Image 1 (cartoon, helix red, strand yellow):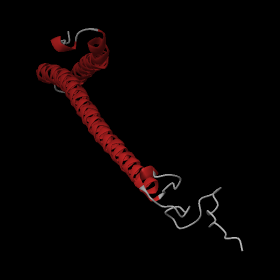
Image 2 (cartoon, one colour):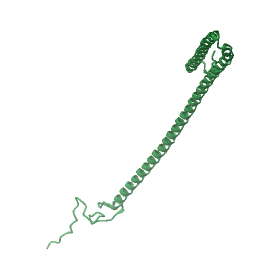
Image 3 (cartoon, helix red, strand yellow):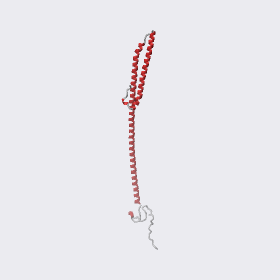
Image 4 (cartoon, helix red, strand yellow):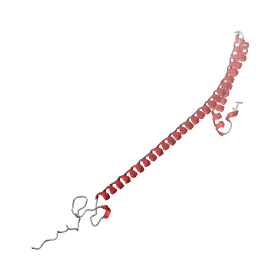
Length: 195
């Protein structure tokens, strides 16, 4: 009876053992068929040797009996060796398959971890880049606000309104600080002398 590997029990183990059991059965059947053929050949040759001895030839039948036992032992030992080798090959193949599966699983886990780490690194770099872009945009917006405020302040100081003494100016010419007449204003006319 073939030995079963204790580590290969269960549904997967029985499926892996099925070809091995079939090979073992085939080897044992082949050994028995060879033994049967040898027995039949020995019986036929002994019968012919006895028939030849009845006619006067020497009796060779004990020779076939002497060769029969070592041949049977040789066939039996070879069959058992083939069965043992097949079982061992099946065990080695199962162990190799388990090791390959474990190696593939380990490599897949390593690849997944490397991809996850790469994605996390990429995500953090993208987040830092977006934060830097947002900060730069905010700084530029503040700078634009300051420039606009300065421009507004400079415009407000250069425009002088002439009616009265607003803004501390004493310009009576009716012109703005820009050199032109104030809209809607006319220059005061000097009093005329009548002749």
